[in-house]
Length: 192
Image (cartoon, rainbow, N blue to C red; front, side):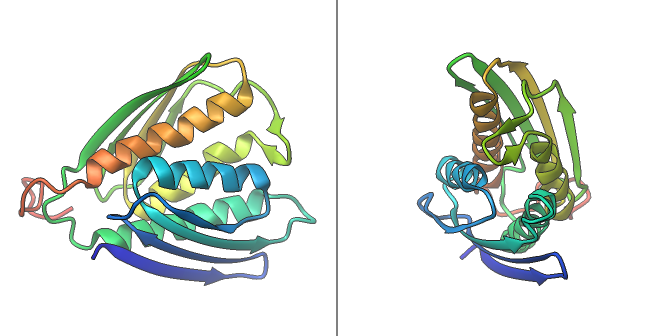
């Protein structure tokens, strides 16, 4: 089973993540933001991962530390669940429309973490969730997961739609990239 459980506690946050890559797309848990919960649920559903996230943090400061640290812990759990990456497709991409919004994501499970964003999110915040935290989350997740993630915002006027299309696009790209299609390491180096 490709699953992992990771916990991380600091003076600012207390995060626990459980992930099952070959799941049914279920989500349980909570964070400091209702909108962030909604995005993690959409992420789990469209990736086909079973995901449990318990994220407490210094909300009295703002959501930044908790969202970023959730990205760190989720990235570590994702990497651990993949193991040696034997047999995975490795690459994945998706273009997801959501009404007027259109977002593309492409991923390489390369062992080299990096997030590259082209475009801007059209607005400041959705409810209690500042738009700038989308980038912070995916920077942390990509780095800790050891994936190269490219995201392009191709269209979008509604901030909620654009952020949701982004999470769903990344989820669909990851679903493809982690799918098993063989039994070797998909690299000429023999390691990822």
